Length: 518
Image (cartoon, rainbow, N blue to C red):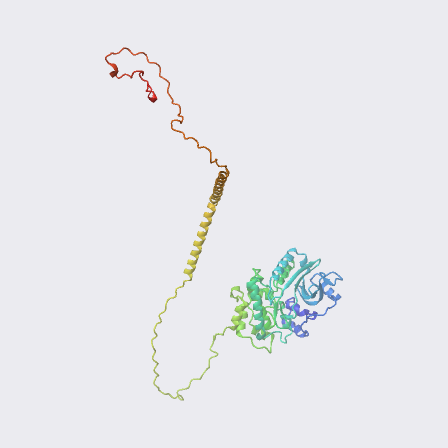
C-alpha cells in the first residue's frame, strides 16, 4: 500500500466518520488516482528515509531508535505496505535469510500491557502452526526496547479492498468472486476443522491477492487479539463492526460461524461496493436490522455495467448474514452447494400463456378414445432378506479377544504364584545334581585306589581253616546262687522221691544249671 492510498485503507479499516454520507465517500473514491499494483523490490534500497521516520513517530506504533538503519540488527526496512488502527506494516529485507518479509509493528499503547503482549504471543504461536498455501505464514515475534513487531511472510500483490477501489464501478461481478470464494473455502476449512482456529476479523483488507490470482488470508487471530487488547486500554470497539457477527458484538465465545458471517459481509461488499451496514450506529444495526438485498443496494449506489446478481447468490449471502448462528451455512462448502443447487419454480411466470379458441371458430371432431395398452401384471420379486452379520462378527471377535485376554491373565497369575516354588525346585535340582556328581566321583576314586593297592604274593601259605571247635565261645553267664533255704522239717520217709521234691543235689526253687551240670 502506498501513501497515496492512505484514504482508501483507512476507509477499508472503517476508521472514518460514521456521519459522512455515501455520496461524499463515493466522490473521494472517484477522485483518487489509479495506482498500479505494488511490485516486489529486488534491488537493495537505501535505509528508511527521514520522512518515514517522522511518519512512524506520528503513528500509533512505537518508532525505532533514531539513526538506526535496521530493526533488531537484522531487518532492513524498505517501504511502507499499509497502515490502520491496528498498526503499521512495513516491507523489510531479512539480511540473515536474504528474503523479503513483512513487519507488523505493534501499537505503542500495547507495549506496556503485559497481559496484552502475552495474549498476542499466544496468537503468534498458534499462527506458527498454520501451514496452508492460502494463509500468510508467521515467522517470528521480535521485541526490543520500544519496538515490537510480528515478522510475517511477504506476499507480492494487493488486498481485495485495494483491487475493489481500482474497479470502475467499485465492485465485482459474481463470475470474478466465485473463484475467490472457492480458494477462501479451502483455507478456512483447513483453519476451522484441522487447525481449529477462527480468524475473527475476516474482511477485504485482510485478504491478499497475488498477480497470479491466488488468495492468501492474513492476520489469522492477530488482528482480533490486538483489537481486544486495545479495547481494554481505550474506548474503541474490539474488531471491525461491519464485519462482526451479532455473537461477536455481544462478547460470546468465538466460533467458526463468526467467520462465515464475516465472509458473507465480505462478499456483500465485493458485489455492491460497501458492507451491509456502513453508516449510523453500525453495532445496533448488526444486532437487529436485516440488510437489504444486494440488488437493491446496487440500485441505491447506481451501479451500472454489471450483470445482475443471481437469486442463488442473494439467498446464500442472506443465509450467511443470519442473526441466528444455527441458520448459517456450516462451511464454505455448504455455501458453494447453495450456489450450485437448481432453483425451484415458485410462481407461474415461466408458464406459456395460450389463448383458448372460441366455440364459433373451433371445429369439433369426435374420435374414439384410444385403448390403453395392456398392462402386464408385475410379479413380485422374491427378495432374500439381508442379514447384517457385522454386529455378530464384531461380538464374536470381541468374545475371542476377551477369552485370550483372560487366559493370558490366568497364566500370568499362575507364573507369578509359582515363581518361588520354581526357584526352590531349581535350587534342589542343582543340589541333587551336585550330590550325584560327588557320589560318582567318590566311587571312581575308590576304584582307582583299589586298583593301585599291591596284590598278595602267590607262594604264601594259605591261612589255616578254623574249625567250629576252635572258635572261641563267648563266656556263659551263670546267675548267682539263691540264698540257702532253711532246713525243711522232717518228712515222711515213706514219701521218697515221689513226693514231688527236687532231685538229689538241687535245692528247692533253684533252676537247673546249663550244660547238663546239676
